[in-house]
Amino acid sequence: MNVAIINYGMGNVASVDKAIKFLGFESIITNDPLEIQQAKYIILPGVGAFAQGMENLHKLGLVEILSNEVMHNKKPFLGICLGMQLIASRGFEPNLTSGLDWIKGDVIKIIDPKKSIPHLGWNEITETKNSIIKDFNNKDFYFIHSFHFDVLNKEDIAATVNYGNDYVAAIQKDNIFATQFHPEKSQTSGLELMKSFFSYYAKN
Amino acid sequence: MLKTRIIPILTFNGFALVKTKKFDNPRMVGNPVQAARVYNSRGVDELIFIDIFATKQKRKINLKVVKDVIKECFMPVGIGGGINTLEDINDLLKVGADKVIIKHIALLNPSFITSAANFFGSQCICISIDVYKKNDEYFIYNQIGVNYTMVDYINIIQELGVGEIILNNVDCDGMMNGFDTNLYNMVSLIAKVPVVYVGGGGNLEHYEELFTKTTCNAVGSASIFHFTQHTPLDIKIRLKSIGKPVRI
Image (tube, one colour):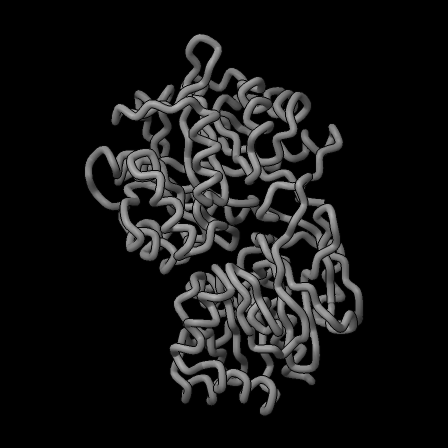
């Protein structure tokens, strides 16, 4: 089994790769369609702006390939941070951009004059349904984001985080799992969550 | 609730870790990779690694060392020193840095902050600000003849898209005799982005005082970890005892 970590010029692929290898799995950092098709799991990491992320995916011809693997072939998918946001219908960073549209909803700016933005640091999550993240209720994970995913169908939400308001911290729907926080940067809890992702889809 | 961050800072001279006092008298304090390994095993919230001589010596930070430091870390790492171009930032992000810490080029050419934030996202663009006090006002410390008051400079860099600020009072650096809480309170009135407050921590009482007298929620420290038996966990246990949210 192997893991394709999508390399589309949006940061932190090295950290994700390091975490996967630490867990004892094989991984490749790639944007090659064939390697993505052959992989058993797909991880879309990413840091940066929504519009730039989509532009890079389009430029590399990855939008169709990823959609086909995840939505049609139902390959287990982990989206991290920007990689979670890009599966939304639309983003607004910096301007209105269509997303992959696998999970309905918009990615919008966090507006809260009482809070410093970005939401940056360790914050505990609250699980909202039976999902991969259920055993991690109240655990701290590392967040860094100025936009949040306003998920349309609340049953897609797996966990929330409170920073003045409740924001979506994790999503799970069928073969799609995604986190706003960085599991690869969240020490033991993060590594254990990534391990749970693999074992969950190995079984299901 | 968002947790208070206690961030060890590793300052590097190109060969070894060093710790300064008032930005002078660098004293060798060990090996960066070993230090990163220890901090990772202690589960620290975050780590900052800066080559404090790179700009002065007109060289780039050693990417091999950066890579080896980051390899030890399963927590966020901020890297700084000698950053002058977007390519320098890209090099650091590529080896796994989560944030880059910029000082010199932002003072010389503040619009660089906007270019960097637009390209990489403002969340990874961290500006380091060193200040000193003169006649009851704080000014930006620098050796390139730039003249800003702290308040003006913070307003400017926020306008330009900075994601986080690391604020250091030069006169407190390495002195271990307490934080300048008045400075923090002044900054908290204008800061719209997270601020990591640095300079002066020498014992647990200093941290208790900082977190009681101010709204500070992130602190960066070096000397207390190098020169006393205290660990980041000791500080967190103390902060927890006064009701501050910490991740233990």
